[in-house]
Length: 226
Image (cartoon, rainbow, N blue to C red):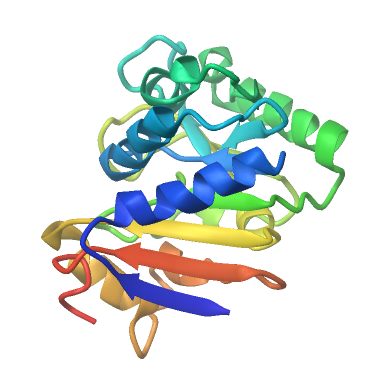
């Protein structure tokens, strides 16, 4: 099931789903970016009980966790460290370097969720180039099916640092994927991914849960090209 919602505040809409799954004790995947940060801030204000939940990450830059470019660092500052009943956190150790960090995260996923992880909830953004997580247009990681977490030695946009990303088999194995996008600069990417004729070259167009729901939350500028 794919459902596209154009709302005044997509961050608020996603926060409701995020907090609900966390209170149920699910396995959740957080992502980086400025728009998700607003949802995290709202979730921190709600301060629901996340103590039974486990938080994972869609991707990470190969930087220390306290670096300004760290996705974990952003989520920790905006949400995780502000919760009075925080979750268990499984972060990607980007400081190990892209190959070692990808191998360690792949092993962690297999240890806790098996060879075919089925997350309860995955949150994703979409870049102006149509990328999701750190799956960039034209890059070999798009075709990775054996690994759960793949090294990304060359990023598709700034900051130009190596990364680690979940792969499409993991993203499309989820029970629910929420895509959160705001801003006119994302409108063309959204049209290519979720319009009437999706472009297979746009990574976001490949996010189609096999046995789950895809909920796309957009503000009006992001939806303007649909």
